[in-house]
Amino acid sequence: MGQNLQGRERLRPIDLARGHGLSTQAVRNYEEAGILPAADRTPHGYRTYTPLHARALRAFLALVPGHGHQTATAIMRAVNQGVAEEAFRLIDESHFQLLDDRRTLQAVESALRDLAPTTASEPDAAVSGPSGTFIGTLAGQLGIRPATLRKWERAGLVRPRRDPLTGYRVYDEADARDVRLAHQLRRGGYLLRQIAPLIAHVRAAGGLEPLEAALGDWRRRLSARGRAMLTGAAELEAYLRERG
Image 1 (cartoon, rainbow, N blue to C red):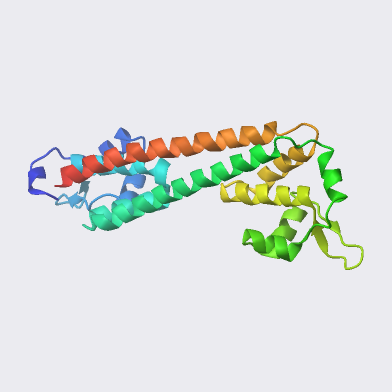
Image 2: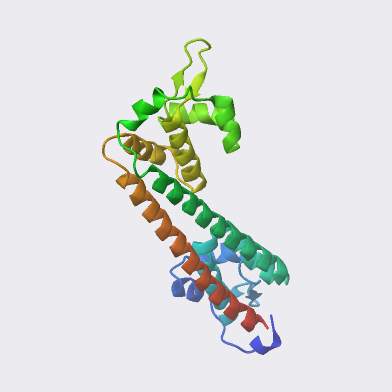
């Protein structure tokens, strides 16, 4: 703790907890996890905190929405251990992940634009067209395992036909489209149970509105993460300045 903090206001655990809507046990847990600097102790062994600890707590709570609890903890621990470069690396990784998620969203939106002319009758037309793609080939194109495609089939995301001679799964154009959409949505953090009804609606006469709504929600969540990262960065910078 910097010399400029000597003689500053002393706070009890309850003061720190109430100021942030936490329990005193949560404050102690944060200190033990390295999120807060080590507290001073009274002659009777009671913890005492300072405004620096309050600033650290504000920084941590501001970092969580943008980076997640685990990464926010690692960032604060690195700062408190005097290895700010490690904290900056973790922040860079979070920003890279956000950028990758934005690119994934753009890829899904591009796929949606490609699907714009699709109607309920088109999948049947696709079945009568080219013979289709076998499971191993499609999985290889997407960089996933055939077992993943079989899992998606059990979840109702895709319904490939069977080759009458070999019994192998064959994915027509509509199936491959659904698989690619499912793959992108999985990368975007959606669960199989969330994706299945979207794919079903795409195949049905209702059109693409449900998928468009999902993409809108995804876009809003990415924007919220980006703004939360800005807020967290401001609070962390304030904490770094106060640490000296």
